[in-house]
Image (tube, rainbow, N blue to C red; front, side, top):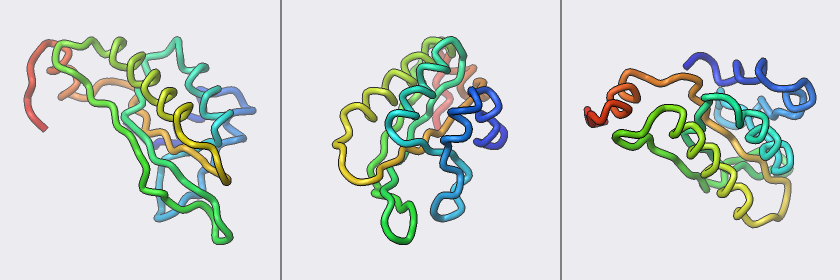
Length: 130
């Protein structure tokens, strides 16, 4: 998958600049506030980038902290990679839109730019387990 920050090179400068990269616990993924995360998902609409899931962060006086609210989107048996990527981005958008507003909230997105070996098996209808 490469470094999570590699996705920033695929985004317009304004969205890359809006990314929150210094996160708690040495997290290597990037986050955005609500309006920007929705723009990121729209920008990736014509790509095969999947969103495996994400976490919610809340900023306090010490910086961003995990709220321990999160979601995930699993690749299904027989589902093509492109279909999974579209569904995963749609699920991410739905989670963000439904999340209650309040405070300085940001959303970590966990990306996968291409299928793993397990994903390729799932695409072929083979469930190799976790």
